[in-house]
Structure formats: structure tokens, C-alpha cells
Amino acid sequence: MPELPEVKTVVKALKSNIKNAKITDVFVFLDKLIKNVSPQEFKEYLLNETILDIYNVGKNIIFKLSKDKNLISHLRMTGKYFTDTSLHHKRKHDYVIFELNNQMYLFYNDSRQFGTFHIKDESELFTTKPLDKLGKEVDQIDPDKLYQLIKYKTIPIKSFLLDQSYILGIGNIYANEILYLSGVNPWTKVNKIPYAKLIQILNNTKIILDKATELGGSTIVDFSGLNGAEGQFQNHLQVHMRANLPCNKCKTLIKQETIAQRMTYYCPLCQKENYEQEK
DNA sequence: AACGAAACCTGCGCGC
DNA sequence: TGCGCGCAGGTTTCGT
Image (tube, rainbow, N blue to C red; front, side):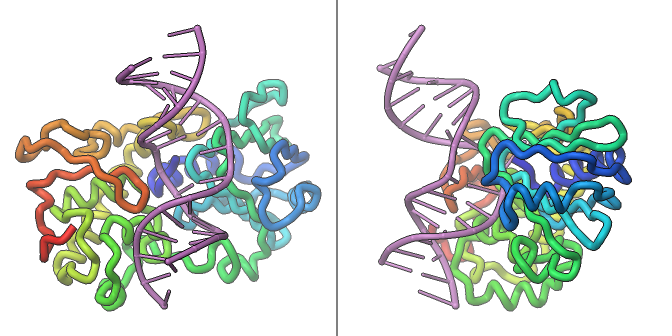
């Protein structure tokens, strides 16, 4: 479900609700979500730990705990958090429940069961899965280094934007929107993109992700923030989910094609720049 | 090494 | 009403 703006929205809400709470019990109803320890160990690691801080690394949510431990949660497509005062309000697909000392329960809900949890020591947090090999958020990227990198790659720019080992936090919705705003055809191979165009893409990435974060993300099919809060950026989408509707700039009908197994939307006129016209 | 496609799941909306 | 299909905010793993 969530891309960077949605994850940041969830983190912000979690922070104001459960920061400094102590975990007094843990219930796991779907073992496979717990990745690097057994469900029993998971519970033991978390019991009596205080949540000192909550922050994001790309789309990962990090719960910083006492004793140098960290809980890493990835929502994948359909992960959601809810808080409630009673254990009896458990709903369908609530797979992990944290009991907190402030008379609250934190529910992790995930209908497609793709989400993941890891427990990591501070010392190995960024040197082992899942946080090793991640790229940087767009404002930390050295554009010259990135340009050197793409010079020898032939994947479509759409695939490149989705790859978390380069730029952190872009998913399918925002990749579509970034390429529209940049006037770049999503099929364009990255080695054909001029330096100035790369700079423009990076600038637009920041503009779109920042704006979407400000609006609490996009709520289209599945995403909601903590306790079902809806975002508002969906009202600003130019191409995503607009197949066969007129482009807001030129009235040409928006095209829909699959790239990197993800539905891709673009204006064939405004995003003609192919720099070699291959497809 | 690099790239594309399949796999992991459930649910929903659509056409028949 | 029911069934099959395609699709959904992501990533890892498997082939070529």
C-alpha cells in the first residue's frame, strides 16, 4: 500500500500516540510475518521494552527500543496500524497485537499478508537485511554519482524509480506522477536520459513526495493512515488511475501499459521525450 | 551482472 | 447469484 508519504504519515501518527509506551504483551497470529527470529523469540525481545522513538528508513518503520534493540516493520501492500483500548476489538486480518502499558493496544492488520517484521540490534541495523543495500532519500542524493550509475543501465526509467537501492520511497503512484511532471516517457531507458533531465526528475520527485506527505498521502484503493485516516493527495493525481481520460494539459487520452509488472499511466503527447524513440 | 518474470496473498469490481 | 479474470500503494527469488 504505502509509499514514502504514506509511511511518513503513519510514523507521525504512531509517534504522537505510542512513543514512550512500554510493551507489556505481544500476540502473533501469523508466524510468517516475523522474519529473522521465531515468534517466541520475537515476543521475548519485545516484552517490557519501551518504544523510545519511531522513524522511517524509506518505506520501513523503525521502532527504536531500549537495550539497543529495534523493531522494523514494513507494510508492503496492505499493512495498516490501528490503536484500540480493548483486545476484543480484533478484526479480520489483525495478525500482530502489541499490548502497551498506557491501556492501549496496537493492532497490525494486513489483508494480503505481505508485511514483514524484523528484530535487529543497533549495531547491525544498517548492515544486514532489510536495511542494507537501500539508497537514499532524494534530498541526500549526489546527482553526479547517480548520473554515473545510470549511464550503463538499460532498464526503463519507471523501473529505476521503483528500485529502492537508488532513490528511496518512490512507489507506483508517485513514479507515474513524477514522470508526468517531468515530461519523460516511462519506457525511456535510463542510459538515454541527459544529465539535465535527471536533475529535473530528482527535483520533481522531491516536489511530489513533499506535497503528498503534507497532504497525508494518497487514499485510493487501500491505504489509510493510523486508525483509518485518509490522505488527500489522490485529488492531485494527474495520470495515475486516469486511463482513457484526457490529459489535464493537452487533452490527449492517458495511456495505460504495464512496465515492471506495475500499471503505468502516461500522456503519450506530453511524455513523448524518448531521446531515441524506442519502446 | 543485469534484467524480466514469477511468486507471495486476499479482496474487489467487472463482464459474462 | 456465481464464476473467472485482472488488478491492487511492494519486494524477494528464480530463470535466462
